[in-house]
Image (cartoon, rainbow, N blue to C red):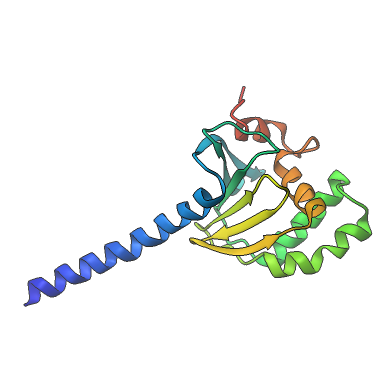
Length: 176
């Protein structure tokens, strides 16, 4: 009897661990067929490691106009307000839109972004038609149809005015 309970507990634990992992992959697979790794990079400021990034695209071939997914795995506790502030700051630095337009996106970010505990991953899934699906832990947390916002957000990592060109090259699988 005791052996059976331990076995059930072990199987339940395995199911608990396996389901979120499978589900996380399924969200990406639903939007990015044949997703393969394009490249990966670590973002850090000075000596502080912030997140690891991985770019996925069909068969590992990135095309900005086609579906792709950017996965950020946080190496720190990412608080929602800090994520929003950094996003706004970076959009303004890149001059992604007017300051008033960027400020008008704050409610959208408030609804769409969440706290990201250390070790958690967020998938930014570009559907190829200009929409963005945000997913974490095997579930969709937001779907964004504002194409101008989506472009400004994804340009933080994949656009022409990135903060760290080496980071972007590694993400695109073109590291030196």
